[in-house]
Image (cartoon, rainbow, N blue to C red; front, side, top):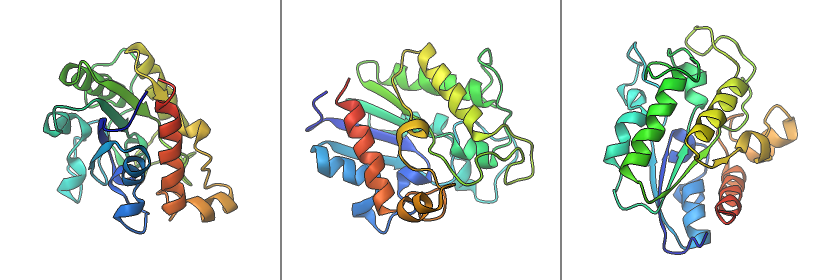
Length: 216
């Protein structure tokens, strides 16, 4: 896919927003735009999740879930990149659910609804999902707000399966980002805190996305 001058909407959380990078020019979305000549639009909001949350978060901004932000993005995108799920694992109260779910208060139901909303709003765009990257707490079965959770790998697995149901291409950053903070040298070289990518990590994500989109 030719990326120059394409309008690309990035819907995500703090990693998309740029947390961990040293400045705007090092956000992975910014790096992507500079390297490709695409118009890269950043719709990342830190702390947000794909699924809805029943109990209000300490910061109301964290409850601006992906679902309600689809209609607020510019409508003329050629490509829409969805990058989320780590916060659903980290501090959501929605159960992970099953592939049969349609309830937006489950991760699976919300993921299905999100893809339907994006596809309906952007029927001619290339829609792409990026899975969460690895993080230090990824094997935990109790999340940051004290609720039981599946390990992050299960969110990744279901995200990929749901995307396949909608024939949406997946860039599996869990498998191919080259960022695994449980390995100390990778944590130091590519992350700011064991989750958010630093400048090197952000560039690596941008490069992986560019390579992936060039295959479509």
